[in-house]
Image 1 (cartoon, rainbow over the protein chains, first blue to last red):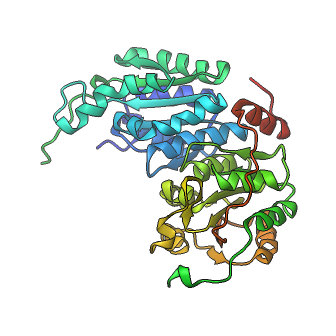
Image 2: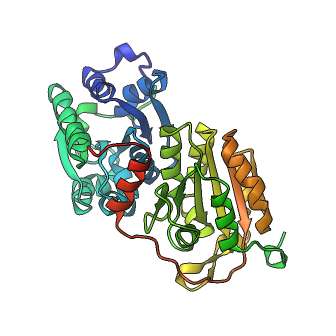
Length: 178
Length: 198
């Protein structure tokens, strides 16, 4: 595993740059390899509080509390976590709160583990069923722009937005450990 | 310990009313159901955020708020059933230890809103032990209305994350229904903090 931030892919750096430039002060997450640079950067940044969650729906409530208190917060999760959030998403609609989440996808591209497929293939529909706008980035060069567009819709227009980060960005997972 | 044998119990309405009266600066988040009714019954405040849903989310919402407003005391007032659904949030809170966050669980050992079915906290779960196990060292239980005074002092002092289990009687006071209009409550709460609409 790469652990030095400078070795992170450019698209992951672009994600953090959008959050940092946008004044995000809380980053909540259930980890995923695709979020690793943003998580490391959040931990290292004295102006950002990183919050590791036991389950993703905590992050929906935490981001709502942050907004009530005047801060911008974002939730990082893997596609499987979207299923854990479904009822908690009702908080966003009920109070009309802005919401921004970044979802790394599994179960959709060269997936080795069939247990990832049911939730991965239902992720976009589950978000949309709960009233969350879905954007998708699949190519490294488009990540920064799409994340920025979703971020602005959330915090400038009060939208509830998820950006799905396609599994092809992360590439094929190596299952053999040597 | 068998909690069914406990006889001393706080009066939930009086406890909450005294607690809030002694913490005028507190930002209060109430969990759905009876806890929201208790908070509203003690007098509506702009700095109250009543939940009517999002079960299991009260303490996580309180954490986000406490991190965003470190100079203000934040109090989550919720019930045992609501807390149990979001029990992992206590680990998340323990990992951050916001000094301005107090969690008050009004524990009657039952799901009051749905017909008084027994909850885990009267079937063997010790919520204080759970909170301590997750890493909230300042966790304890009380069983009297008068204990609200000491808890209020702790809230105002903002000197550490605290978890308080309040044993209350399993009665059902008359419902006192706070506004259900989420945007109204949100905007009122933010305005009380001097925050502007986007």
